[in-house]
Image (cartoon, rainbow, N blue to C red; front, top):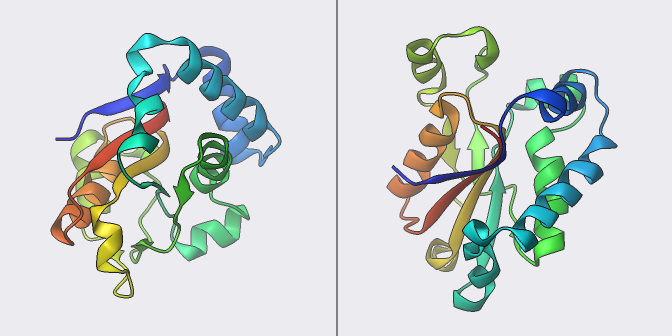
Length: 174
C-alpha cells in the first residue's frame, strides 16, 4: 500500500470546515484550507518530500472524481476544488480526466469498513485517451477525507493496473 499523507486529523474546527464545505456548499472555505495546507508544507520537516517533488519529474495531482450524478447534485467536487488550488500553489499539473468514476456508489459516510470496500469496487476506470507519457509522471491522488481508505485504495489499484508506477496518496484529513 502506498503511504498516505494527511494534513490534519479529522476533528475539531477542520472537521467542521470539511462538513460545511461538502454538505453546506461553503466553497469559500477552500481558500482557507489550502492556505493552511501550504503553510504546513513550508513549515514541517516531515513534509519536506513535497518540496523535492518538482525537481525529479512531472507531478500530476489527480483529485478523486465524483460520479457525475453526485457532482451535479452538489454542484462541485470538493476534492477537485481543493486540489486545483493546491496544485496551482505548488506548481503541479491538475488532471481531472485521467481517472473516471463510472459507478454511482452510495455515500461512504454511513457504511462500515467492509461495506465501504465493497461499495467502491469497480467504481473507477482510467480514461483510454491517456498518453503513455503521463504514466511516467509522479501521481498524487488527492481526496478530502481518509476514513478507511477504501475509495483511495480502489483508485490507486486502477491506476497501477493501467501502468502508473509512482503514486502518492494525499488527503486533507485523516
